[in-house]
Image (cartoon, rainbow, N blue to C red; front, side, top):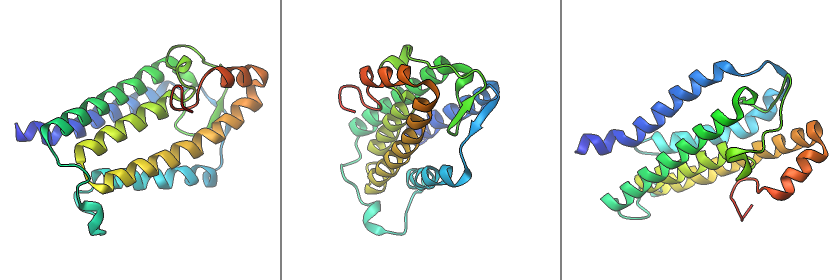
Length: 190
């Protein structure tokens, strides 16, 4: 049972990563791509977040302390949130189809997708990833994981702001209307 607990969440993330990599091969050609410097602004905090989630020990000792006791209950809830978040991203990725890109881009023949998970939030992939990071953090139950949540949130907010600007430029009033009826990241909150 110890092995199951040790590998459950990394296994979910690994399966998600493989799916994401395979799915990325079906995207449309890119018509407009953001600069490397723009990408680095959100990639660096995301990389730091990933490091904090996968490291077993970080050099700042207080970050290795627990914010809640590690119990079967916290691990189970964390695992469930991780799984739900990752599944939500897969639903969003499948729904957006060939318009998807890992970076901020405009695709050839880019379509504005507003149905499925995109009717719930404008950025369901970030919502799902954030939920998965929160779940993983709860399962880890150490302060480093709380910092990982904050860094992931900073990364996603930066990236979605760039995407929002590009979508308004590309789709104009259609995107503005979509933005008014659909929250960006958290339903009924923001």
